[in-house]
Structure formats: structure tokens, C-alpha cells
Length: 86
Image 1 (cartoon, rainbow, N blue to C red):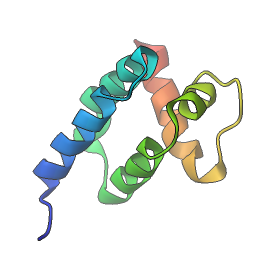
Image 2 (tube, one colour; image 1 turned 135 degrees about the vertical axis):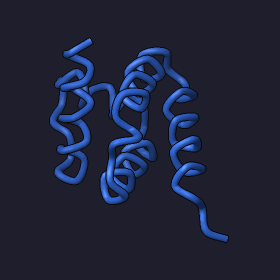
Image 3 (cartoon, rainbow, N blue to C red; image 1 turned 90 degrees about the horizontal axis):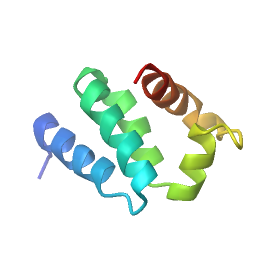
Image 4 (cartoon, rainbow, N blue to C red; image 1 turned 135 degrees about the horizontal axis):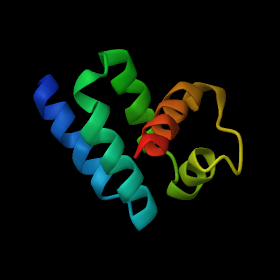
């Protein structure tokens, strides 16, 4: 069974909201609310891959304590941009 785009967006928004750490919940909820509907399928694939990573790692990448892996650089940069504009 194939997932519709709308179902995928709702699922990814829920995953963004229920991370396990409050900091990541806040950052990723804001990002998903602002950008999720605009993302292409390829960008959604990249965001979903990022969500598979450990919260502590993602937080260090977004807070720029550590460089993000190459495959996540565009998504992390987009999240940082959205966080900075808030």
C-alpha cells in the first residue's frame, strides 16, 4: 500500500513533535510547521532520513557544536535558517 503525500506529511509532522527531547520537539515542530508543505519529495526523503538520527546528534548539528554529515548538510542548514528567523 502506497502512502499519500498528505499522510506522509502528517506522519513526519508527528515524528517532528515527539522526539524525546524538548529542544528537538521545539526546533523540529517549528521547522515542520513552516517548511514541510513546501518540500519536494526528495527533500522529504532527506528530512525523514534526518529524523532517523539520534536527537543528541541532530541537536549538536543544529546548534553547530559539531559538523553534520554531508548527507544531512542541506536539511540541517535549512533548519538552522528557520530557527534563526524565529
